[in-house]
Amino acid sequence: MYNWKNYNNKKLSLAKYFDAYNNDNLFNYVENSYYNHTRDIFCICLLLSKKKIKKVKVFDYGSNIATLSNIKNKIEIKGVDFYIFDPFFEKKNLIKFDKIKFKIINNLSNFNKKINFLNFGSSLQYISNYKDIFKKINFEKKSIILITATPFTINKTYSSSQSNHKDLIQIVNNFYELVNFLKRYNFNLVFKSSIDINLAKIKNKKKNTFFLNLIFQKN
Image (cartoon, rainbow, N blue to C red; front, side, top):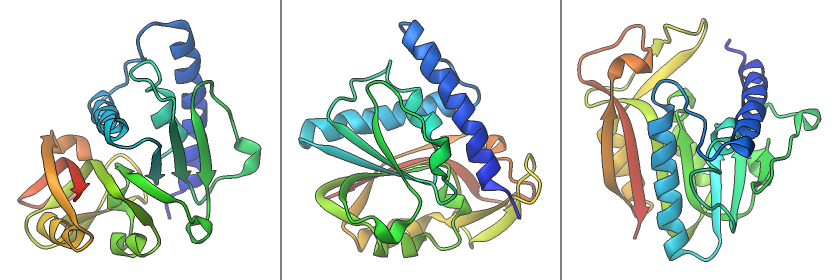
């Protein structure tokens, strides 16, 4: 089984590095791969939310603090509350950053805040049944769901090992099934873009598989 605890602990060190860099520089640290692109989409969604909502409450599902630590040179994040879901989090690893208000949640059952921004930053493919999550999360009337760097298929859902991490399995969900499922919660697809599929690191990639960024908006 893949060790997500070790993975997230490594990201803590990276987050500290990003934060120190951004404190000393005018522009944000340039990350590798698709991360700069997905961080920008995250920031744009955040800006759109701030225009419509007084208090933006972001629930970051399955991500880590590194995501947030490299956006503060991009946009003003005053008035935004970030909640990060990390089931492997330990209090001894808690760190603080200037200008970023966040809380790490390790038990979804105890989370009762109403949110207006749900973020799946390259995490949906590692969730055995993403539909169960929506039974536990409460949304405000005006809300956004952002899904970035996630593989989907327009054929039947399948699983594959990941080529760059031993014992890590990705679930390649059916795109249309996700779109129709979110419609039940009054979320409509308003944006979609694709990334180079090779960056998804799917070892046994099937035909009609795409690496996508998706934005859903609640009406």
